[in-house]
Length: 269
Length: 318
Image (tube, rainbow over all chains, first blue to last red; front, side, top):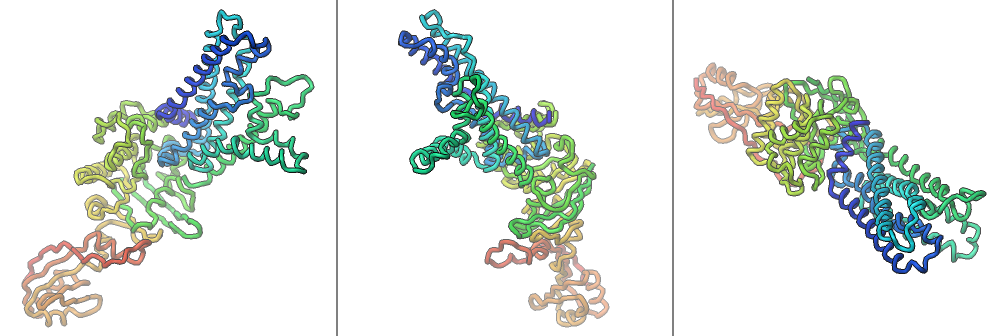
Protein backbone atom coordinates (compact mmCIF):
# COMPACT_ATOMS: atom_id res chain seq x y z
CA UNK A 1 0.00 0.00 0.00
CA UNK A 2 2.86 2.37 0.81
CA UNK A 3 4.24 2.05 -2.73
CA UNK A 4 0.81 2.72 -4.22
CA UNK A 5 0.38 5.79 -2.02
CA UNK A 6 3.78 7.09 -3.13
CA UNK A 7 2.85 6.49 -6.77
CA UNK A 8 -0.48 8.27 -6.41
CA UNK A 9 1.08 11.13 -4.46
CA UNK A 10 3.61 11.67 -7.24
CA UNK A 11 0.86 11.33 -9.86
CA UNK A 12 -1.35 14.01 -8.35
CA UNK A 13 1.61 16.37 -7.85
CA UNK A 14 2.93 16.10 -11.39
CA UNK A 15 -0.16 17.05 -13.33
CA UNK A 16 -1.01 20.70 -13.92
CA UNK A 17 -4.77 20.41 -13.48
CA UNK A 18 -4.28 19.68 -9.77
CA UNK A 19 -2.67 23.07 -9.30
CA UNK A 20 -5.05 24.96 -11.57
CA UNK A 21 -8.08 23.63 -9.79
CA UNK A 22 -6.68 23.99 -6.28
CA UNK A 23 -5.44 27.49 -7.09
CA UNK A 24 -8.82 28.46 -8.51
CA UNK A 25 -10.55 27.21 -5.37
CA UNK A 26 -8.22 29.17 -3.08
CA UNK A 27 -8.58 32.30 -5.22
CA UNK A 28 -12.38 32.05 -5.22
CA UNK A 29 -12.37 31.49 -1.46
CA UNK A 30 -10.10 34.48 -0.80
CA UNK A 31 -12.07 36.71 -3.14
CA UNK A 32 -15.40 35.68 -1.63
CA UNK A 33 -14.23 36.33 1.91
CA UNK A 34 -12.77 39.68 0.96
CA UNK A 35 -15.70 40.96 -1.12
CA UNK A 36 -18.44 39.75 1.20
CA UNK A 37 -16.68 41.30 4.16
CA UNK A 38 -16.37 44.59 2.28
CA UNK A 39 -20.09 44.48 1.55
CA UNK A 40 -20.91 43.69 5.17
CA UNK A 41 -18.67 46.47 6.35
CA UNK A 42 -20.39 48.89 4.00
CA UNK A 43 -23.90 47.88 5.03
CA UNK A 44 -23.15 46.39 8.41
CA UNK A 45 -25.65 48.54 10.22
CA UNK A 46 -28.45 46.51 8.60
CA UNK A 47 -27.09 43.16 9.82
CA UNK A 48 -28.56 41.53 12.92
CA UNK A 49 -26.39 39.89 15.57
CA UNK A 50 -27.73 36.45 14.52
CA UNK A 51 -26.79 37.08 10.91
CA UNK A 52 -23.31 38.17 11.93
CA UNK A 53 -22.95 35.00 14.02
CA UNK A 54 -23.76 32.88 10.95
CA UNK A 55 -21.44 34.91 8.74
CA UNK A 56 -18.30 32.83 9.37
CA UNK A 57 -19.68 29.51 8.04
CA UNK A 58 -21.47 31.33 5.22
CA UNK A 59 -18.28 32.99 4.05
CA UNK A 60 -16.19 29.88 4.74
CA UNK A 61 -18.44 27.76 2.52
CA UNK A 62 -19.08 30.49 -0.04
CA UNK A 63 -22.70 30.50 1.14
CA UNK A 64 -23.24 26.74 0.85
CA UNK A 65 -24.11 26.95 4.54
CA UNK A 66 -26.91 29.29 3.50
CA UNK A 67 -28.25 26.79 0.99
CA UNK A 68 -26.33 27.68 -2.20
CA UNK A 69 -24.61 25.02 -4.29
CA UNK A 70 -21.06 24.52 -2.99
CA UNK A 71 -19.18 25.57 -6.11
CA UNK A 72 -15.64 25.04 -4.82
CA UNK A 73 -16.56 21.50 -3.82
CA UNK A 74 -17.46 20.80 -7.44
CA UNK A 75 -14.17 22.28 -8.61
CA UNK A 76 -12.22 20.10 -6.19
CA UNK A 77 -14.26 17.04 -7.16
CA UNK A 78 -12.92 17.52 -10.70
CA UNK A 79 -9.45 16.67 -9.33
CA UNK A 80 -10.90 13.30 -8.37
CA UNK A 81 -12.64 12.86 -11.70
CA UNK A 82 -9.39 13.57 -13.52
CA UNK A 83 -7.62 11.15 -11.18
CA UNK A 84 -9.47 8.30 -12.87
CA UNK A 85 -10.21 10.09 -16.13
CA UNK A 86 -6.56 10.49 -17.07
CA UNK A 87 -5.99 6.79 -16.47
CA UNK A 88 -8.45 5.88 -19.21
CA UNK A 89 -8.20 8.88 -21.52
CA UNK A 90 -4.44 8.58 -21.92
CA UNK A 91 -4.06 4.82 -21.51
CA UNK A 92 -2.23 5.35 -18.23
CA UNK A 93 -4.15 2.62 -16.46
CA UNK A 94 -1.95 -0.09 -17.96
CA UNK A 95 1.22 1.72 -16.92
CA UNK A 96 -0.28 2.15 -13.46
CA UNK A 97 -1.21 -1.51 -13.14
CA UNK A 98 2.16 -2.71 -14.34
CA UNK A 99 3.72 -0.52 -11.63
CA UNK A 100 1.23 -1.54 -8.94
CA UNK A 101 -0.58 -4.71 -10.03
CA UNK A 102 -2.93 -4.99 -7.06
CA UNK A 103 -6.11 -3.35 -8.27
CA UNK A 104 -7.65 -2.93 -4.84
CA UNK A 105 -4.47 -1.23 -3.65
CA UNK A 106 -4.44 1.12 -6.63
CA UNK A 107 -8.12 1.91 -6.08
CA UNK A 108 -7.87 2.72 -2.38
CA UNK A 109 -4.58 4.58 -2.75
CA UNK A 110 -6.20 6.84 -5.33
CA UNK A 111 -9.27 7.45 -3.16
CA UNK A 112 -7.13 8.19 -0.11
CA UNK A 113 -4.57 10.48 -1.72
CA UNK A 114 -7.11 12.46 -3.74
CA UNK A 115 -9.45 12.56 -0.75
CA UNK A 116 -6.62 13.85 1.44
CA UNK A 117 -5.61 16.53 -1.07
CA UNK A 118 -9.21 17.66 -1.43
CA UNK A 119 -9.79 17.68 2.34
CA UNK A 120 -6.74 19.87 2.92
CA UNK A 121 -7.66 22.14 0.02
CA UNK A 122 -11.23 22.71 1.14
CA UNK A 123 -10.12 23.32 4.73
CA UNK A 124 -7.52 25.78 3.45
CA UNK A 125 -10.10 27.50 1.25
CA UNK A 126 -12.47 27.81 4.20
CA UNK A 127 -9.72 29.21 6.39
CA UNK A 128 -8.51 31.69 3.78
CA UNK A 129 -12.05 32.88 3.20
CA UNK A 130 -12.76 33.38 6.90
CA UNK A 131 -9.39 35.00 7.61
CA UNK A 132 -9.85 37.36 4.64
CA UNK A 133 -13.22 38.42 5.99
CA UNK A 134 -11.84 38.73 9.50
CA UNK A 135 -9.07 41.04 8.28
CA UNK A 136 -11.53 43.30 6.46
CA UNK A 137 -14.03 43.40 9.33
CA UNK A 138 -11.40 43.81 12.02
CA UNK A 139 -11.91 47.07 13.84
CA UNK A 140 -15.33 47.64 12.26
CA UNK A 141 -18.55 47.86 14.22
CA UNK A 142 -19.29 44.28 13.14
CA UNK A 143 -16.11 42.21 13.69
CA UNK A 144 -16.37 38.59 12.52
CA UNK A 145 -17.19 36.43 15.56
CA UNK A 146 -14.35 33.90 15.45
CA UNK A 147 -15.97 31.65 18.07
CA UNK A 148 -18.46 30.40 15.46
CA UNK A 149 -16.48 31.16 12.29
CA UNK A 150 -15.09 27.66 11.87
CA UNK A 151 -18.27 25.79 12.81
CA UNK A 152 -18.82 24.71 9.21
CA UNK A 153 -15.30 23.64 8.25
CA UNK A 154 -15.67 20.01 9.28
CA UNK A 155 -18.96 19.52 7.47
CA UNK A 156 -17.67 21.37 4.38
CA UNK A 157 -14.69 19.02 4.32
CA UNK A 158 -16.83 15.90 4.73
CA UNK A 159 -19.20 17.02 1.97
CA UNK A 160 -16.38 17.87 -0.46
CA UNK A 161 -14.54 14.60 0.14
CA UNK A 162 -17.77 12.62 -0.33
CA UNK A 163 -18.57 14.54 -3.53
CA UNK A 164 -15.04 13.88 -4.80
CA UNK A 165 -15.26 10.17 -4.04
CA UNK A 166 -18.65 10.06 -5.75
CA UNK A 167 -17.17 11.70 -8.84
CA UNK A 168 -14.21 9.32 -8.76
CA UNK A 169 -16.47 6.29 -8.49
CA UNK A 170 -18.61 7.52 -11.39
CA UNK A 171 -15.51 8.08 -13.55
CA UNK A 172 -14.11 4.66 -12.72
CA UNK A 173 -17.45 3.13 -13.69
CA UNK A 174 -17.94 5.16 -16.88
CA UNK A 175 -14.24 5.31 -17.83
CA UNK A 176 -14.99 8.69 -19.34
CA UNK A 177 -14.10 11.90 -17.54
CA UNK A 178 -16.29 14.14 -19.70
CA UNK A 179 -19.38 12.02 -19.14
CA UNK A 180 -18.61 11.87 -15.46
CA UNK A 181 -18.24 15.65 -15.17
CA UNK A 182 -21.50 16.19 -17.03
CA UNK A 183 -23.20 13.68 -14.75
CA UNK A 184 -21.85 15.41 -11.66
CA UNK A 185 -23.48 18.69 -12.72
CA UNK A 186 -26.59 17.32 -14.45
CA UNK A 187 -27.64 15.07 -11.58
CA UNK A 188 -28.02 17.75 -8.89
CA UNK A 189 -28.91 20.68 -11.13
CA UNK A 190 -31.30 18.99 -13.53
CA UNK A 191 -32.31 15.48 -12.52
CA UNK A 192 -33.08 16.16 -8.87
CA UNK A 193 -34.76 19.48 -9.61
CA UNK A 194 -36.92 17.90 -12.31
CA UNK A 195 -37.93 15.14 -9.91
CA UNK A 196 -38.80 17.71 -7.24
CA UNK A 197 -40.73 19.80 -9.76
CA UNK A 198 -42.70 16.82 -11.06
CA UNK A 199 -43.59 15.74 -7.55
CA UNK A 200 -44.57 19.29 -6.69
CA UNK A 201 -46.94 19.84 -9.62
CA UNK A 202 -48.37 16.42 -10.44
CA UNK A 203 -51.59 15.80 -8.53
CA UNK A 204 -51.67 12.70 -6.36
CA UNK A 205 -47.96 12.76 -5.58
CA UNK A 206 -48.35 14.59 -2.29
CA UNK A 207 -47.62 11.38 -0.41
CA UNK A 208 -44.18 10.97 -1.90
CA UNK A 209 -43.30 14.67 -1.81
CA UNK A 210 -41.51 14.43 1.58
CA UNK A 211 -39.34 11.64 0.19
CA UNK A 212 -37.56 14.07 -2.12
CA UNK A 213 -35.44 15.10 0.84
CA UNK A 214 -33.69 11.75 0.40
CA UNK A 215 -32.55 12.60 -3.13
CA UNK A 216 -28.78 12.20 -2.85
CA UNK A 217 -27.64 15.73 -3.69
CA UNK A 218 -30.57 17.33 -1.89
CA UNK A 219 -29.56 15.36 1.18
CA UNK A 220 -25.91 16.18 0.55
CA UNK A 221 -26.68 19.88 0.51
CA UNK A 222 -28.01 19.58 4.05
CA UNK A 223 -24.53 18.61 5.27
CA UNK A 224 -23.54 22.24 4.87
CA UNK A 225 -26.82 24.05 5.25
CA UNK A 226 -28.17 22.49 8.43
CA UNK A 227 -26.69 24.45 11.28
CA UNK A 228 -26.80 21.95 14.12
CA UNK A 229 -28.84 19.09 15.50
CA UNK A 230 -31.43 20.52 17.86
CA UNK A 231 -32.62 18.62 20.94
CA UNK A 232 -35.44 16.22 20.07
CA UNK A 233 -34.91 16.62 16.33
CA UNK A 234 -35.06 13.45 14.26
CA UNK A 235 -31.97 12.69 12.14
CA UNK A 236 -34.15 11.93 9.12
CA UNK A 237 -36.78 14.57 9.89
CA UNK A 238 -38.23 17.12 7.51
CA UNK A 239 -35.99 18.82 6.52
CA UNK A 240 -33.13 16.38 6.83
CA UNK A 241 -30.51 17.11 9.46
CA UNK A 242 -26.85 17.31 8.45
CA UNK A 243 -26.25 13.91 10.03
CA UNK A 244 -29.08 12.50 7.92
CA UNK A 245 -27.47 14.20 4.93
CA UNK A 246 -24.14 12.53 5.66
CA UNK A 247 -25.84 9.15 5.99
CA UNK A 248 -27.84 9.47 2.74
CA UNK A 249 -25.20 11.18 0.59
CA UNK A 250 -22.39 9.16 2.17
CA UNK A 251 -24.40 5.97 1.70
CA UNK A 252 -24.95 6.62 -1.99
CA UNK A 253 -21.25 7.46 -2.35
CA UNK A 254 -20.23 4.31 -0.51
CA UNK A 255 -22.43 2.11 -2.70
CA UNK A 256 -21.04 3.70 -5.88
CA UNK A 257 -17.46 3.38 -4.62
CA UNK A 258 -17.95 -0.30 -3.81
CA UNK A 259 -19.58 -1.02 -7.19
CA UNK A 260 -16.71 0.84 -8.89
CA UNK A 261 -14.18 -1.21 -6.92
CA UNK A 262 -15.82 -4.53 -7.80
CA UNK A 263 -15.95 -3.65 -11.50
CA UNK A 264 -12.41 -2.26 -11.48
CA UNK A 265 -11.21 -5.59 -10.14
CA UNK A 266 -13.23 -7.57 -12.69
CA UNK A 267 -12.92 -5.63 -15.92
CA UNK A 268 -10.05 -5.54 -18.39
CA UNK A 269 -7.69 -2.64 -17.79
CA UNK B 1 16.88 -14.78 -14.70
CA UNK B 2 13.28 -15.65 -15.39
CA UNK B 3 11.64 -18.29 -17.48
CA UNK B 4 8.26 -17.09 -18.69
CA UNK B 5 5.71 -19.88 -18.78
CA UNK B 6 2.36 -19.15 -20.39
CA UNK B 7 -0.18 -21.92 -19.98
CA UNK B 8 -3.59 -22.17 -21.62
CA UNK B 9 -4.07 -18.46 -22.20
CA UNK B 10 -7.52 -17.64 -23.49
CA UNK B 11 -9.71 -14.61 -23.99
CA UNK B 12 -13.16 -14.22 -25.47
CA UNK B 13 -14.85 -11.01 -26.58
CA UNK B 14 -18.63 -11.28 -26.93
CA UNK B 15 -18.49 -14.97 -27.64
CA UNK B 16 -15.64 -14.70 -30.15
CA UNK B 17 -12.33 -16.21 -29.13
CA UNK B 18 -9.48 -13.71 -29.44
CA UNK B 19 -6.93 -16.04 -27.85
CA UNK B 20 -7.42 -19.79 -27.47
CA UNK B 21 -5.45 -22.16 -25.30
CA UNK B 22 -2.09 -20.55 -25.97
CA UNK B 23 0.92 -22.07 -24.23
CA UNK B 24 4.59 -21.28 -24.71
CA UNK B 25 7.81 -20.61 -22.88
CA UNK B 26 10.38 -17.87 -23.10
CA UNK B 27 13.85 -18.70 -21.86
CA UNK B 28 16.55 -16.43 -20.48
CA UNK B 29 19.35 -15.43 -22.79
CA UNK B 30 17.13 -15.21 -25.83
CA UNK B 31 15.03 -12.77 -27.77
CA UNK B 32 11.69 -14.42 -28.50
CA UNK B 33 9.76 -12.82 -31.31
CA UNK B 34 5.99 -12.86 -31.13
CA UNK B 35 4.45 -12.88 -34.60
CA UNK B 36 0.98 -12.93 -35.98
CA UNK B 37 -1.20 -11.06 -38.48
CA UNK B 38 -3.23 -8.04 -37.38
CA UNK B 39 -5.97 -9.14 -35.03
CA UNK B 40 -4.22 -12.43 -34.26
CA UNK B 41 -4.32 -11.70 -30.53
CA UNK B 42 -0.73 -10.62 -29.83
CA UNK B 43 -1.56 -7.55 -27.75
CA UNK B 44 -4.34 -9.40 -25.94
CA UNK B 45 -1.91 -12.20 -25.12
CA UNK B 46 0.60 -9.73 -23.69
CA UNK B 47 -2.08 -8.06 -21.58
CA UNK B 48 -3.20 -11.48 -20.33
CA UNK B 49 0.39 -12.29 -19.38
CA UNK B 50 0.56 -9.14 -17.24
CA UNK B 51 -2.83 -9.61 -15.62
CA UNK B 52 -4.25 -6.52 -17.34
CA UNK B 53 -6.98 -8.45 -19.14
CA UNK B 54 -9.17 -11.02 -17.49
CA UNK B 55 -9.17 -14.39 -19.19
CA UNK B 56 -8.24 -18.05 -18.97
CA UNK B 57 -4.85 -19.56 -18.24
CA UNK B 58 -1.85 -18.34 -16.34
CA UNK B 59 1.56 -16.83 -16.90
CA UNK B 60 4.40 -17.08 -14.45
CA UNK B 61 7.79 -15.45 -14.25
CA UNK B 62 10.09 -17.94 -12.54
CA UNK B 63 6.95 -19.52 -11.15
CA UNK B 64 5.38 -16.31 -9.89
CA UNK B 65 2.39 -14.61 -11.57
CA UNK B 66 2.98 -10.97 -12.47
CA UNK B 67 0.36 -9.67 -10.05
CA UNK B 68 2.11 -11.50 -7.18
CA UNK B 69 5.53 -9.99 -7.91
CA UNK B 70 6.85 -7.58 -5.31
CA UNK B 71 7.71 -4.31 -7.04
CA UNK B 72 7.09 -5.88 -10.46
CA UNK B 73 8.99 -3.34 -12.56
CA UNK B 74 12.16 -4.63 -10.97
CA UNK B 75 11.33 -8.06 -12.43
CA UNK B 76 9.39 -7.42 -15.63
CA UNK B 77 9.55 -4.30 -17.79
CA UNK B 78 6.78 -3.81 -20.29
CA UNK B 79 5.76 -1.55 -23.14
CA UNK B 80 2.23 -2.10 -24.36
CA UNK B 81 1.02 1.24 -25.67
CA UNK B 82 2.34 3.60 -28.30
CA UNK B 83 2.25 6.59 -25.91
CA UNK B 84 1.53 5.35 -22.41
CA UNK B 85 1.82 8.65 -20.56
CA UNK B 86 -0.08 11.80 -19.72
CA UNK B 87 0.59 14.38 -22.45
CA UNK B 88 1.43 17.23 -20.06
CA UNK B 89 3.34 15.33 -17.39
CA UNK B 90 7.01 15.94 -18.09
CA UNK B 91 9.02 12.94 -19.23
CA UNK B 92 11.20 12.96 -16.13
CA UNK B 93 8.16 13.26 -13.86
CA UNK B 94 6.52 10.32 -15.61
CA UNK B 95 9.51 8.16 -14.75
CA UNK B 96 9.76 9.62 -11.24
CA UNK B 97 6.14 8.61 -10.69
CA UNK B 98 6.84 5.02 -11.74
CA UNK B 99 10.05 5.04 -9.70
CA UNK B 100 8.15 6.20 -6.61
CA UNK B 101 6.20 2.95 -6.56
CA UNK B 102 9.39 0.91 -6.53
CA UNK B 103 11.73 2.83 -4.27
CA UNK B 104 13.91 3.59 -7.28
CA UNK B 105 16.10 6.67 -6.72
CA UNK B 106 15.90 9.72 -8.96
CA UNK B 107 19.51 9.15 -10.01
CA UNK B 108 18.34 6.00 -11.80
CA UNK B 109 15.64 8.04 -13.57
CA UNK B 110 18.28 10.45 -14.87
CA UNK B 111 20.56 7.56 -15.79
CA UNK B 112 17.90 5.82 -17.89
CA UNK B 113 16.90 9.10 -19.56
CA UNK B 114 20.51 9.55 -20.60
CA UNK B 115 20.82 5.93 -21.72
CA UNK B 116 17.79 6.30 -23.99
CA UNK B 117 18.83 9.64 -25.41
CA UNK B 118 16.03 11.54 -23.72
CA UNK B 119 18.17 13.77 -21.54
CA UNK B 120 17.51 16.90 -23.58
CA UNK B 121 13.72 16.47 -23.49
CA UNK B 122 13.44 15.13 -19.96
CA UNK B 123 11.73 18.31 -18.75
CA UNK B 124 9.46 18.62 -21.78
CA UNK B 125 5.85 17.55 -22.07
CA UNK B 126 5.43 14.35 -24.06
CA UNK B 127 2.55 15.77 -26.09
CA UNK B 128 5.21 17.36 -28.28
CA UNK B 129 7.03 14.05 -28.74
CA UNK B 130 7.10 12.18 -32.03
CA UNK B 131 5.97 8.56 -32.04
CA UNK B 132 9.60 7.49 -31.90
CA UNK B 133 10.35 9.70 -28.90
CA UNK B 134 7.25 8.35 -27.24
CA UNK B 135 8.48 4.82 -27.81
CA UNK B 136 11.81 5.72 -26.24
CA UNK B 137 10.05 7.07 -23.18
CA UNK B 138 7.97 3.91 -23.01
CA UNK B 139 11.15 1.86 -23.24
CA UNK B 140 12.74 4.01 -20.55
CA UNK B 141 9.84 3.11 -18.29
CA UNK B 142 10.24 -0.57 -19.14
CA UNK B 143 13.97 -0.50 -18.34
CA UNK B 144 13.68 1.74 -15.29
CA UNK B 145 13.63 -1.06 -12.74
CA UNK B 146 16.54 -2.90 -14.41
CA UNK B 147 14.27 -5.94 -14.88
CA UNK B 148 15.27 -9.47 -15.87
CA UNK B 149 12.46 -9.73 -18.40
CA UNK B 150 11.09 -7.42 -21.07
CA UNK B 151 7.67 -7.72 -22.68
CA UNK B 152 7.39 -5.28 -25.57
CA UNK B 153 4.55 -4.77 -28.01
CA UNK B 154 5.78 -3.27 -31.27
CA UNK B 155 8.63 -1.30 -29.68
CA UNK B 156 10.10 -0.29 -33.04
CA UNK B 157 6.90 1.49 -34.13
CA UNK B 158 7.70 4.99 -35.27
CA UNK B 159 11.45 4.62 -34.91
CA UNK B 160 13.74 5.73 -37.71
CA UNK B 161 16.29 3.25 -39.17
CA UNK B 162 18.91 4.35 -36.63
CA UNK B 163 16.37 3.90 -33.87
CA UNK B 164 15.45 0.46 -35.11
CA UNK B 165 19.10 -0.55 -35.19
CA UNK B 166 19.56 0.90 -31.73
CA UNK B 167 16.65 -1.07 -30.31
CA UNK B 168 17.91 -4.24 -31.98
CA UNK B 169 21.29 -3.86 -30.33
CA UNK B 170 19.66 -2.95 -27.03
CA UNK B 171 17.46 -6.04 -26.97
CA UNK B 172 20.19 -8.38 -28.19
CA UNK B 173 22.51 -7.01 -25.54
CA UNK B 174 19.79 -7.41 -22.93
CA UNK B 175 19.31 -11.05 -23.90
CA UNK B 176 23.06 -11.64 -24.11
CA UNK B 177 23.31 -10.71 -20.44
CA UNK B 178 21.17 -13.75 -19.66
CA UNK B 179 17.83 -11.99 -19.48
CA UNK B 180 14.58 -12.66 -21.35
CA UNK B 181 12.97 -10.63 -24.09
CA UNK B 182 9.50 -11.29 -25.49
CA UNK B 183 8.81 -8.85 -28.30
CA UNK B 184 6.16 -8.48 -30.98
CA UNK B 185 6.83 -6.67 -34.22
CA UNK B 186 5.48 -6.33 -37.72
CA UNK B 187 8.96 -5.66 -39.03
CA UNK B 188 9.77 -9.22 -40.04
CA UNK B 189 13.13 -8.38 -41.53
CA UNK B 190 14.02 -6.78 -38.22
CA UNK B 191 12.73 -9.76 -36.30
CA UNK B 192 14.88 -12.04 -38.48
CA UNK B 193 17.95 -10.10 -37.36
CA UNK B 194 16.96 -9.87 -33.73
CA UNK B 195 15.05 -12.94 -32.60
CA UNK B 196 16.46 -16.32 -31.62
CA UNK B 197 13.10 -17.93 -30.97
CA UNK B 198 9.63 -17.38 -32.36
CA UNK B 199 6.08 -17.77 -31.20
CA UNK B 200 3.73 -17.46 -34.18
CA UNK B 201 -0.01 -17.20 -33.73
CA UNK B 202 -2.98 -16.77 -36.01
CA UNK B 203 -6.58 -16.12 -34.96
CA UNK B 204 -5.48 -16.49 -31.37
CA UNK B 205 -4.11 -19.98 -31.84
CA UNK B 206 -0.57 -21.29 -31.85
CA UNK B 207 0.84 -21.85 -35.34
CA UNK B 208 4.50 -22.44 -34.54
CA UNK B 209 7.06 -21.96 -31.83
CA UNK B 210 10.75 -22.69 -31.68
CA UNK B 211 14.03 -21.43 -33.12
CA UNK B 212 13.80 -18.94 -35.98
CA UNK B 213 16.02 -21.16 -38.17
CA UNK B 214 13.70 -24.16 -37.79
CA UNK B 215 10.66 -22.05 -38.63
CA UNK B 216 12.25 -20.69 -41.80
CA UNK B 217 13.61 -24.10 -42.75
CA UNK B 218 10.11 -25.57 -42.57
CA UNK B 219 8.93 -23.27 -45.34
CA UNK B 220 8.08 -24.74 -48.72
CA UNK B 221 9.60 -21.60 -50.21
CA UNK B 222 13.09 -23.05 -49.67
CA UNK B 223 14.28 -24.33 -53.05
CA UNK B 224 17.29 -24.98 -55.26
CA UNK B 225 17.63 -23.27 -58.63
CA UNK B 226 19.31 -25.45 -61.20
CA UNK B 227 20.48 -24.25 -64.60
CA UNK B 228 21.32 -27.04 -67.04
CA UNK B 229 21.34 -27.60 -70.80
CA UNK B 230 19.78 -31.01 -69.97
CA UNK B 231 17.00 -29.64 -67.79
CA UNK B 232 14.30 -31.95 -69.11
CA UNK B 233 16.45 -35.00 -68.44
CA UNK B 234 17.31 -33.73 -64.97
CA UNK B 235 13.65 -33.01 -64.16
CA UNK B 236 12.75 -36.56 -64.98
CA UNK B 237 15.60 -37.87 -62.83
CA UNK B 238 14.60 -35.69 -59.86
CA UNK B 239 10.91 -36.62 -59.91
CA UNK B 240 10.07 -38.63 -56.84
CA UNK B 241 8.52 -38.61 -53.41
CA UNK B 242 8.52 -35.22 -51.74
CA UNK B 243 10.43 -33.52 -54.53
CA UNK B 244 8.75 -30.78 -56.50
CA UNK B 245 10.28 -29.64 -59.75
CA UNK B 246 9.13 -26.48 -61.45
CA UNK B 247 10.42 -25.46 -64.85
CA UNK B 248 10.73 -21.70 -64.47
CA UNK B 249 12.08 -21.04 -67.95
CA UNK B 250 13.86 -23.13 -70.59
CA UNK B 251 16.94 -24.66 -69.02
CA UNK B 252 16.10 -23.53 -65.45
CA UNK B 253 14.46 -25.65 -62.76
CA UNK B 254 13.31 -24.77 -59.29
CA UNK B 255 13.57 -27.81 -57.05
CA UNK B 256 12.13 -28.09 -53.58
CA UNK B 257 12.33 -31.06 -51.25
CA UNK B 258 15.93 -31.91 -52.07
CA UNK B 259 19.24 -30.41 -50.94
CA UNK B 260 21.60 -28.82 -53.47
CA UNK B 261 24.31 -31.38 -52.73
CA UNK B 262 21.98 -34.30 -53.45
CA UNK B 263 20.89 -32.71 -56.72
CA UNK B 264 24.52 -32.22 -57.70
CA UNK B 265 25.36 -35.83 -56.84
CA UNK B 266 22.38 -37.12 -58.80
CA UNK B 267 23.29 -35.03 -61.84
CA UNK B 268 26.88 -36.27 -61.66
CA UNK B 269 25.71 -39.89 -61.44
CA UNK B 270 23.48 -39.41 -64.49
CA UNK B 271 26.10 -37.53 -66.47
CA UNK B 272 23.99 -34.37 -66.62
CA UNK B 273 25.87 -31.12 -66.96
CA UNK B 274 25.00 -28.29 -64.56
CA UNK B 275 25.76 -24.62 -65.17
CA UNK B 276 24.38 -23.35 -61.90
CA UNK B 277 23.24 -24.82 -58.60
CA UNK B 278 21.98 -22.22 -56.16
CA UNK B 279 20.15 -22.66 -52.89
CA UNK B 280 17.37 -20.17 -52.39
CA UNK B 281 16.58 -19.73 -48.70
CA UNK B 282 13.09 -18.51 -47.79
CA UNK B 283 12.91 -15.28 -45.85
CA UNK B 284 11.22 -15.07 -42.48
CA UNK B 285 8.55 -13.00 -44.18
CA UNK B 286 7.83 -15.75 -46.70
CA UNK B 287 7.77 -18.40 -44.01
CA UNK B 288 5.49 -16.21 -41.91
CA UNK B 289 3.09 -15.46 -44.77
CA UNK B 290 2.98 -19.12 -45.67
CA UNK B 291 2.34 -20.17 -42.08
CA UNK B 292 -0.32 -17.54 -41.39
CA UNK B 293 -1.91 -17.40 -44.83
CA UNK B 294 -5.15 -18.95 -43.66
CA UNK B 295 -5.15 -17.16 -40.31
CA UNK B 296 -5.57 -13.57 -41.34
CA UNK B 297 -8.32 -11.82 -39.45
CA UNK B 298 -8.36 -8.82 -41.76
CA UNK B 299 -7.22 -9.29 -45.33
CA UNK B 300 -7.11 -6.71 -48.10
CA UNK B 301 -8.17 -7.84 -51.55
CA UNK B 302 -4.79 -7.78 -53.23
CA UNK B 303 -2.34 -10.24 -54.60
CA UNK B 304 0.35 -11.60 -52.34
CA UNK B 305 3.85 -10.25 -52.91
CA UNK B 306 6.04 -12.32 -55.15
CA UNK B 307 8.68 -14.38 -53.40
CA UNK B 308 11.82 -12.31 -52.95
CA UNK B 309 14.24 -14.80 -51.51
CA UNK B 310 17.93 -14.38 -51.07
CA UNK B 311 19.67 -16.81 -53.43
CA UNK B 312 22.90 -18.18 -52.16
CA UNK B 313 24.98 -19.11 -55.12
CA UNK B 314 26.56 -22.51 -54.95
CA UNK B 315 28.42 -23.14 -58.16
CA UNK B 316 28.24 -26.84 -58.35
CA UNK B 317 28.69 -28.06 -61.88
CA UNK B 318 30.11 -31.53 -61.81
